[in-house]
Amino acid sequence: MRSPNQVKLEFLKKWARGLQIYRNRKKNMDLLERKNAIKLSADVAMASTKLNSSQWSRALISEASSSDNTITNIVVQQIIGNHKADHVKNYSKNLQDSSATMCIVNSKNTIRSKKILRRSRKSAHPRRAMAATIAKRIVKRRTQMLKSLVPGGKSMDDLSIIKEALDYVLSLQVQVNVMRRLVEISEGA
Image (cartoon, rainbow, N blue to C red; front, side, top):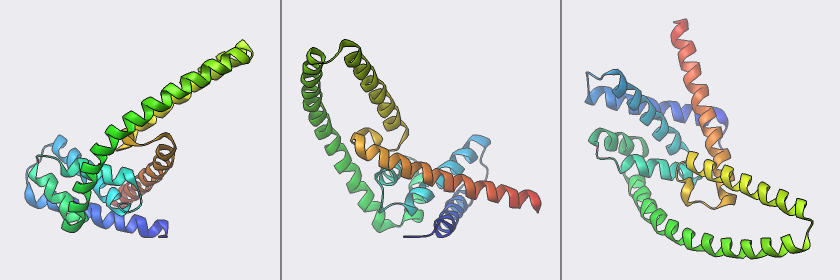
C-alpha cells in the first residue's frame, strides 16, 4: 500500500502533465475553459492514481475518455497511458451491461422486501413497523443520493457504494490538500 505522500506526489505529477498538455494545445483559453481544464486534469490524475483499486476511478476515466473533445482524449491518454485507456473502454462496456442486470436483480429483491415488510407489519407493533418503514425510506433516499455523487455509483450495489464513496472522499481530500498546498506555495513566492 502506498503512503499518502506517494499518492499526493503521483497526483501532482499527473495533474501537472494534464495542465501542460492543455497549455501546449490551446494558448488562449477563457476563464471557463481554464476551469474545465484544471478540473478535468485533476479528476483524471486522481482517478489514475486509484485506477486498479476502485470502480469510481474507472467510471470517471471512462466518462472523460468518451468525450468528443480531442484535447480531453489526449489528456486522458497521456495521463493514464494508451494501454490502460483500452482497459477503461472495456470497463465502460461491461458497466453498461452490468447496470441492466442490476436493475433486474434489484426489482426481484424489492418484491421480496415488500413481502417481508407486509409480514412484519402484521406481527409487529404498528408504531415499530411504521418507524422501520420510515427508516428504510430514509436509508434508501440517502443511498440513492450517494450513488448520484460517486462516479459510476448508479451501477453499484448498496454495500459497494459505501466502500467506493469512502475511497472517493479520501481521494478528493488528497486532491484538495495538494491544491491548497500549491496555492500556499504560490502565494508565499
